[in-house]
Structures are given as structure tokens and as C-alpha cells.
Length: 112
Image 1 (spheres, rainbow, N blue to C red):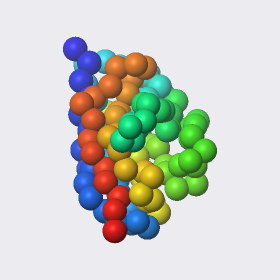
Image 2: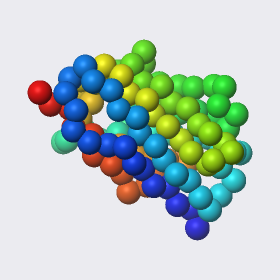
Image 3: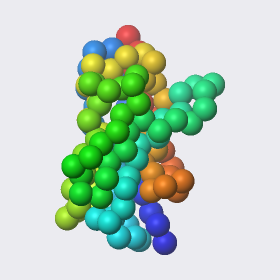
């Protein structure tokens, strides 16, 4: 059974940083492309970052490029999202994903 469990969310002020983690199990993590999705309040679910299985190729949606970094630890089956210089528009529920399979999500709120 595929399991994805996000952690590390919370409430921060604009300009601050957070690191999200995702613990994966039930599949060959080291062979799998992984992504982070985000659903902002009142908006559709969007992919914001993707990383290949080796961790050497990444994609970012333009609204987060330069501020967010996706990475992975294939020995520990962990996926990360380093989020710097957070903005109020980054508020939303963040999901770790294997294809269209997502975790339960974790809330990130950016507010002053």
C-alpha cells in the first residue's frame, strides 16, 4: 500500500522559511518521480515542484522558482520541500505525490 505522510507545515510570517517533509512507503521510492502539489484557498490543485528518481532533475512552477527547492533522500525514503521567502500567496495545503496519489496534505499559512 502506498503511503505518503507530510510534516513540517505551520504558520509563518512573510519572508520566513519552512521545510516540508514527506515520508514514503509501500513502493520503490528510489525509482519514482515525486512531486509536491499545492491547493490554495479557492483555487485548483497545482503541481509546484517535481524531482526525478535520482534527484538530479527538477521542475518548478514559475511562482515558486528561485524560492522553493525540492530534494530527496532515497536511502531514507524522504521527500523535502525547502520554502524560502514565503509569501501570503503561498498559503495552502501542500501534498506530497507519487503520480496522482497524494498524501493527506499539510497546511501552510503565511500571514503577518
